[in-house]
Image (tube, rainbow, N blue to C red; front, side, top):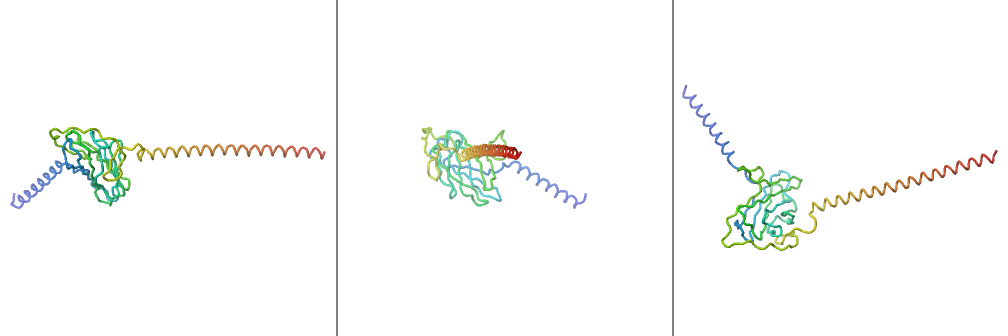
Length: 251
């Protein structure tokens, strides 16, 4: 084999090896999370810890309008206050967490907000399942947890915690307060139904009202129709009677 052919074969082998190595590294690298969380005090039973959430913008046509976060076991909605959020965004408590949202962000702008937790639970890690909503109605769900050592396609933000400090103890449950709408205020579930529940209830009420109106309208129509028929019958009978009397008088 000539030196030229040997060199050419060597280059092909080197390129093939590089491609195989690149593919191997790509498969071995875990997918980057598009929703993340960090803490200034990532330690179990830490008090007044600030959590920083970042949701990476993925849409090319719309911006974020709302984030819904499900709190892990050990953190109640009443333990959460809003520290920072995009301009105009407000926090509302839900039965299992909270939502934070407001005017749509510009397309391509990441959504970042910070909350303060009264006390973190005694755990090794905390998962905050997050659902993102865009202004065009698109929804991204970052709610999957690792299973069998495999990285999920849409992982929930997970915060790893250090062991609790010596002597640290769980605080007493927080008292209920009113629902928070602005940064720095307390947030607990409101006795009023959520927006979704209200919409459903309103829709049902409207449907019942409409059905009632239709029933009333149908009943009124039947009554009016029956009256018209009765008048026609009475009028026809009177005309027939008068015609017979006229014919009899002429005879």
